Length: 262
Image (cartoon, rainbow, N blue to C red; front, side, top):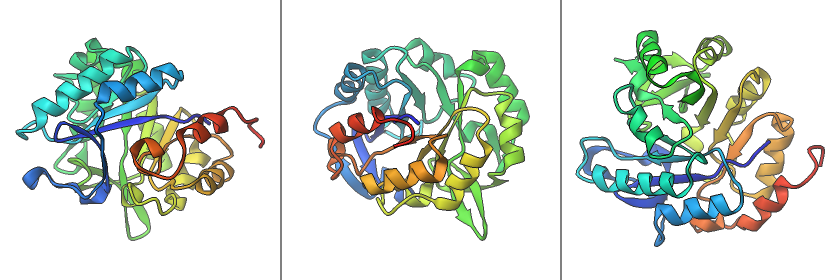
């Protein structure tokens, strides 16, 4: 079980937001934290501590007036830690190579793979041919509707028709190297993980999976470890002191050094 660090960028600033509050209209979001330091500073910190496999997420649409500044910050981070970070947000088969050439180890993709709320195997095939399976991470950011978790796209604003199921994970895993799964309704709230979603991911466990959303304390992290048997990785954003939260970054560094059964 590894800690995967994050750098979320919105309106040209490193931020932590309440995920379900993000809106393209007006480029608004409920903010938990706005950093004074730039994305390159965070990337340098992660590089110093050998925290590979984290993700840089662009939270503005490509049509936003803020997108150029957000993209510039993302590229600064990637260039500060070449091969150490993944990049997502508006990734398509047409621009994926740009992120890899800027230093990303992988591209993270969600919205591009869905058309009108329906998953497109054709688009996934096009992306795979463009950059190769080993450079693709599929983000199945999910929100609960009735008893299932459905993939949401367009920066978590649009429900698709596709639930997150073991059979869907089986299908996609043949065409990507990892999954990144945001429990969107828990994202940025520090109120605990999406337990049913985490349980599904831990029981599946066929390729690497990183979960993000709701881990707000060290007790939450220990609960996550027990619930998953240490089989999936995790991200902590708003709760970390790097982003104004209460969990010391050093405690996360210490936690990763503990024995797997502790």
